[in-house]
Image (cartoon, rainbow, N blue to C red; front, side, top):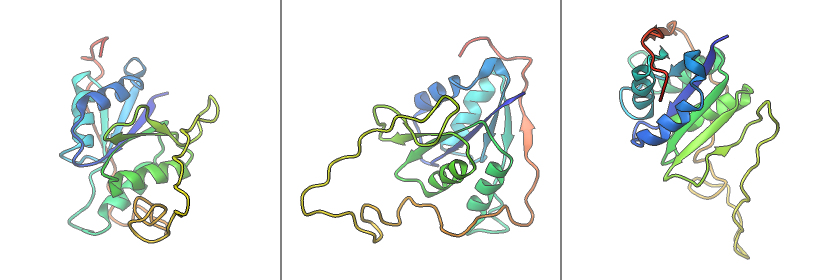
Length: 190
């Protein structure tokens, strides 16, 4: 069975080394399929280029921005998650709302998610269950005496970085994903 690797990420992500290292862990001797949101720049484009350079297949899910300019990205994320994946790699820079949304949907669907943040943390934060057991989470920072976590926008615990509270569906006009690449030409190394 093909290992399905879903990639979501910020349009302003530029660190190719982090993406290459993450993808290397999920290559599975070429028996893996990269699932991408097909953004022409940032993490999606970098991941697709790296994956294809090794002969990997890519399943692309471009958002229908012309038909639905405000909700196309979220609808595309929901459609990708609904098709399933074995893992989700989220490359999040500046709390990217689209990548954060896709990662949250993947977690709700039971897909293990690894988040890579920019600026980089010492280790990626694994926040969802994996078959090998519960992840070890970093210890949260201490809160100064007298300081509480707020609930308003822009404050810790506020609405920034949180997924929407209403369900997101693929909507009408969702197109089937396309695949490209070839496993015949893949090198045996990364």
